[in-house]
Each structure stands twice: as structure tokens, then as C-alpha cells.
Image 1 (cartoon, rainbow, N blue to C red):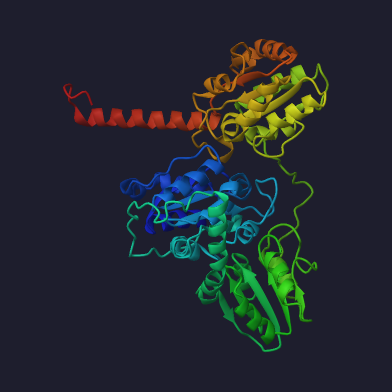
Image 2 (cartoon, rainbow, N blue to C red; image 1 turned 90 degrees about the vertical axis):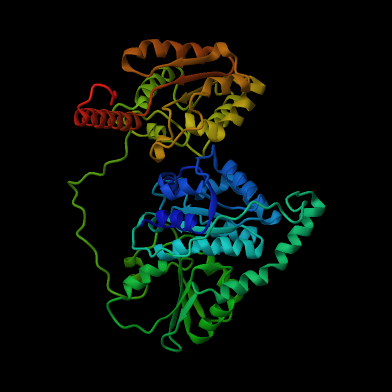
Length: 547
């Protein structure tokens, strides 16, 4: 199984009743696996995509309130969107078990930053699990639900890109757990965060901290293996443990190794390693979270190395060569890439409607001067690259509309926002409301390909609703313009955009054309169904049944 698949199956086997998510690499395959699972269907597990990460988190809290186990999944920047609900869920506590799966993306393979979600667990004072392999990923979902219910708190399960998208054998549990029965909280005011109740709940959360740490100390997933006394000790976390095993696999070694995959940090094990060794090296995927904590309470003179002192790079993923180099071991490197091999940047698919949309945008914006197109997160972000070079910003989901409004407030008129249909319902609607309330002179282009295209073609919450949403928010219907982005319509579309950019208020242009990838998949499925029907009819040989 992929790490993501192991997590999904682990949740099913641990008695989950609902999975809530918004697609984002490298977490997307978890929900997709559950959606395709016959077992999940038979168990009646909720498995529909949410409009954004915040709504997913809040729906999962609601399922926990009703006494059932819930899993919520998103990538690391999605936790930023859900942070309000996530942090407060630690104060409300849980009823049914609640696991928050966050997939971090060190090296930013498909992300705006490489933040480390362990900081959120530390900030919210909740347990964190970080599997080092696919088997642990499968088992830790069940552990997470049990820990959540035992500690009355959500549990964060953190994976990284390589864990999510690498594959290994997984042994499934035989004692699959039935779903919890629906039960309401014993304390009817537990989830009401009025200040007096929140203060009481927060004290309870603080009182639970020693129990969380004790559970970490006793966890079979935190393991200390001693080598030579007085030698070098290594503290490693999550998938980085695999890189150490690979780097040290060929020869005997004297290192003492503490593998940490459950937090809070097991201080007794850390102190035992510290006292046993002459110095420590910390190897962790992501930020120097553990390394910084060690410097806080092990400042007793021994050397502690890692990402902070340059022994390991401060940014990017770890890998076996970086680990081996830090340990003074030989490294294996392939041949250098010859100069004749050119890098190939990503590009919009041939036949993509965004291409024709950007041709329209470039044609009209050139009449006003460059530097006025604010874009968003999605396939259309590739409009920043040649041959289009069409957009000037891409900061976070939903920022296109609000940044265009702010620029217009500063006097940059007209200003253009480019956002996709899925991103618009994720976090663009509130920005449009701000613009409507001030009748800001901006043109919003909602490039509608009827899917969440960037992450593989998941359902879009906006499908069939965009015009009604814009009207409901308050956009003048006369300035909501639909168009079909095709080359044959370029002159007509340019005229519409030029007209709306001249309008001194909020206008919305919606170019609508199905994603070429989902269109081709749909056509293949249609042909396969027709072929199957024809074969069945021929095999039947009957003119009566209609088959």
C-alpha cells in the first residue's frame, strides 16, 4: 500500500464513521481510497469532499460530538485554513475519537511552503503521531483514535510526501472494530466555548499533559537502541529513521539511536540517551522541532548537531545521502545530468480551457499595462510561466480576489483576479463579498473547468452553482458574464472582458469549459460502457429483452 492507502484502510478497520477532506497533494489519495472502497460503502462511512479544510475540520468535530470516530485529511497549508477549528477542538475535547491527518511537503514539490505541522500539535497541546513506515501508518490510525478517546483530545497524525507516496507491504489487523454507537457528550456544555467553560476545559487539557507524555514514554513506537557508551547518539523522527537504516545498513556501527514517532517528546528516553552518549545528532524531516526542544532542556554542555548548526541542510527533504554524509559515511551518487538535457517545467494540458482564458486576459490587459493580474492556487497558476507570463501573484487559496481589491483600493484600476471554480468556493466567496460591499472596481475571472483539476479531478463544490452564488453575494446580474473559452470565440470574449474592465464596480466573468482530463476520462468510460452493452446484446441473441 501507499502510505496514504494504509492510513485510509487503517481508519476503516479502526471503526471510522466519517472521513472529511479537501484535496491537496500529498494527502489526496486517502479520501480517494475510501471513496473507492467497497468495504467503506458497506459500512456506510461518510466520504464526500468538503468545500474547504475548515468545513472539513468542523464537520469532523460534529461527528465526534455525536460519539463517532472521524478522520479529517488535508495537506500542511490546509491546516492553516482549519487552524481556528483545530486549536479550539483541543479545548472542547472530543466525544468520539478525532484524528487530524496532515501531509507535509518538505522541498515544496507542490506547495507554497514547507512548514512542519508538528508545531501545530505542540501549539495546541495535543498528541502527535509520525509513522516511520507504511505498517506504522496503518496501525497509528487505530492508535490515534484510542489515544483521542482516552485523552479527550484530537490527535494529529503527521506524514510527509515520501511516506504518503511510497509503497510497502502492510499486514492488516484481523480484529476490525465496529463503528461507535451514536452517543451525545455526557457534559452537555463541553462543546460550548463560552469563556468560563473554555477556561475550565483548558485546565483539563493542561492536566492531561503528563498523561500524554507518559503514554509517549511507554509507546512501542518510541524505541531506544543503545550502541557504544560514550559514543554518538542519534535522535530521529518519522521517515528519517528509514534514511538512517539505509545509510547504516552495509556496515557495523556504534551509534545509539532513539526513534521518535509519538509526541510529546519522551523526555526520559531522550535524557537516557543524552547521559549515555558524548554528543547527539538530530535527524528529522522538516523543521528542527526536536532539535530546538533539546536545546531548551538539555543545555548541559554536550554537543547537539542537526539542521540548526549546518550538519544537515536547513531546508528541503532528507535523503540517505545527506544522512550518510552527516555520519561520515560514503555516499553513492549517480552520473551528473549532462548539459544537453534541458529541464521541462510543468505546463497546462493541450486543450485546456485555461489556455484560451489567458489568451483573452493577455490581449485585454496589455491595453492597460502589466502588473494587474492577481491569481490563485490551481492549474491556472501555471499561467505564470511561458508562453503566457500572464499573472503577477499567487499567495494562498482565495487571495486573488482580496489582493485585487486591495490593489484597487490603492489606485490600481482596473485590477483583475483569476480564480478557479473549486478555489472560489473554497475561500474566494468571502473576498467577493468584501468587494461587493464596497463596489470595488475589480474584474473577477472564475475559470470554471467543472472539477478540482490540480489534484486529479475531484468533484468541485461549485459545480452548477457559480452564477447563483455570485448573485446571492450581491454581484449585479448584468455584470455576471458567461463565456466559452475557445479560439473561435476569442474576439467575442475579448470584447466582453474589455467591457467589464471598463465598468467601475465588481464584475464577474465565468469562462466555462470542462477540464480536458476529466472529459477524456468520461469519454473513455462512455465508450467502455457502450462496448460492454453491445457485447452483452450480441451474447444474448434475443430481440425481446432489449439488452
